[in-house]
Image (cartoon, rainbow, N blue to C red; front, side):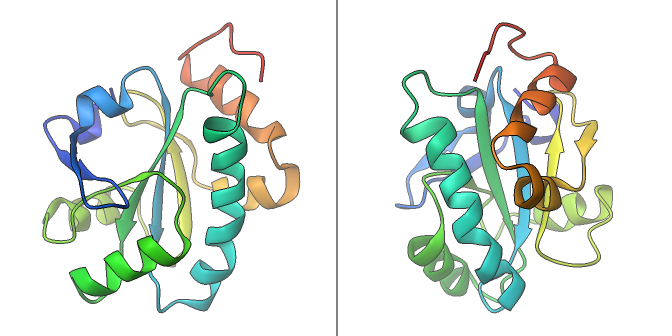
Length: 156
């Protein structure tokens, strides 16, 4: 479980609540800072959705990977609309959780979209996840897994 989200409740795209500990244990976690009103976010989100789907949903053996959306939207309604319209089956920090702002500070988020891939202890593997997915596609995931020390036997 990613320590940085310890004790938090997360939301599914359908609005169900899940415990972060259970959902993120032994996974590489990508914190996705974005907003529905942001054109670059709307441009990148379908690519992230395809990346996630190939790794997790459609894989013969699902990869140890989870995305946690940290919204920069203006309202909970805007956030949920963006999630339902473009997001994959990943998780989100609830809009009204003030921890969203602490995460933005901790990971120095000054522009969106930003995909920060973190280890279980919250240390940054890369803050250039968006660029890496665009340039290397699924190949970047193996280097994230190795850096995260999650499942050394994951072969992709």
